[in-house]
Image (cartoon, rainbow, N blue to C red; front, top):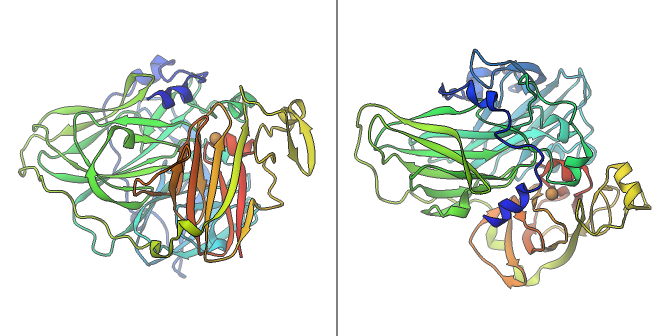
Length: 482
Ligand code: C2O
Ligand code: CU
């Protein structure tokens, strides 16, 4: 993909640069991620406790180096929170870090007070303090939760986990979760702290790592039984890396993107390009022979890197299923969606290395490029570099909104809207309809992309680039629904 190539051409670290890290870990079994109920304390008042704390983990197996991460409940990824659609989610965040933090429930149509954006919907939770999150999850799907305070540091250190909302009529197909992260480690296998917050990353493609993990392990093996159909829930939790994946020569069905159902169809190549925060749900038929192995690849500049493998058990179980999987039910109220009457909101992105930004507004003052670099605000939306004192736009509840984005930078951006899913209705001045609703979408250099959504939930909804260093560097605004 040329677009992915563009993203990665600016990398300063090569994924395969530190050979020893890739050498020491062939063949870990994929850790069974347990459901929340199994691994987390529940209080008398029904809250699951998520303790944000420092802990140690082994990315490279028991004999490999130990890496200190920040975690929820001592695991990377954090515990899976699993609820039924329509159920209450009750989580008590206990902050045992020495930095303030908060949790955002990415992709959920949520009560704005519970959205977890420090500085906009709540104050960050101070060290030693706690915060109760309580909300209903109205739509089934694959979501995730993550820190939303100093995310450029806290996400890079590991503060995230899966949030699975199950369909009421959930089938009994086996599920495999793949949480993919991109870490920048030093030669001792520790998180490279010296480069944390580095200006070069912020002005380029963000903090890109040199080690990829799946469910907190390097190169795990994923068990399959010949003939079975499994549901894969894949999440890209990296700070900034776009992940293009290849699932050997399996030919899965796609059933959802960003948690939102898609009429089942066979996977196309570009479906597996996941920007930061994007998710994909697949139904994969295990069509290979018993006892065989096949790799899962990460693809970068036409180069393939094995990041995991499917390992088939010895026995043939059942004949492969060939019929398409059942479509998942759509519960988001799209029926009210009237793109023709949309309120149009232009948003021009500028900044970054090789960009054309000469000045932008920070704290009400116009700064020139040199001053912006000093202030670490090197990206801007409509000339404003990350100020949250005013919204991008104020709209009335019930209005349809269309944001016309122009990417006038040399980098792709993974634009994420809080609190609802949107539809891409135009690309490069041509109307567009691929039937997908997303909460995060890639906008490539020189592209014009229009997002439309129904503003039916009052509150302050953040809209930002999910390449976290870009967000920190100014690519953030919000929409006021009143
Ligand atoms: Cu997944 Cu504002 O974040
Ligand atoms: Cu960006």
